[in-house]
Length: 46
Image 1 (cartoon, rainbow, N blue to C red):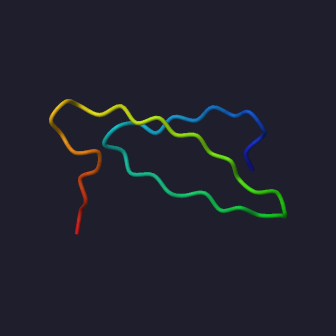
Image 2: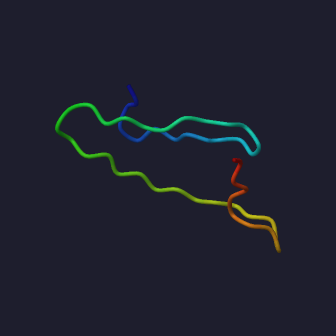
C-alpha cells in the first residue's frame, strides 16, 4: 500500500513492476522521464 503524496524513484537500468489499484479510488500518477540526448526513451527487450 502506498500512502497519499508518496514520492517514488525507479532507478535507471533496474527492472521494476507495475501498480495494481485496489479499492474504488483511482490512481493518479505523474511521471517524469530523464532521457539521455539522442537515445530512446525505452529500450525494449524481447
